[in-house]
Image (cartoon, rainbow, N blue to C red; front, top):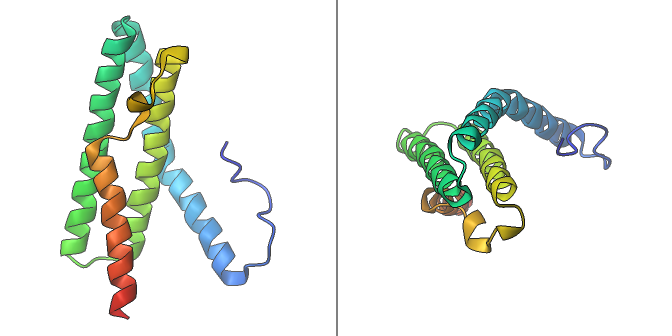
Length: 141
């Protein structure tokens, strides 16, 4: 869906093929989560007919999912585990965020406002956390 198929162009050699493998692995990892989110959103749309109430519930779910990802990354950093796991968690979180913002956009249609699509605080913190960890990682070496 996101244009992940087909040849990526450019000859990046081993690095490009490793990146593609990670993308495929991430797709495999996230697919059941995204399917579950679609199922939950569908059920919520049937159960909560008022659009703004639905958006409130969806934003709460988005925040909860982001908080869980943030907790994972923080724990992973404490254990000094692999950078790769943090990258996978971040990639999964970004895809989940895209799915949640799309669900909110679908629920509100033309009434969607920028604040409705603003990522919840745990998602913003996750982005800052990963950005800061990347900078620390580079500065150590």
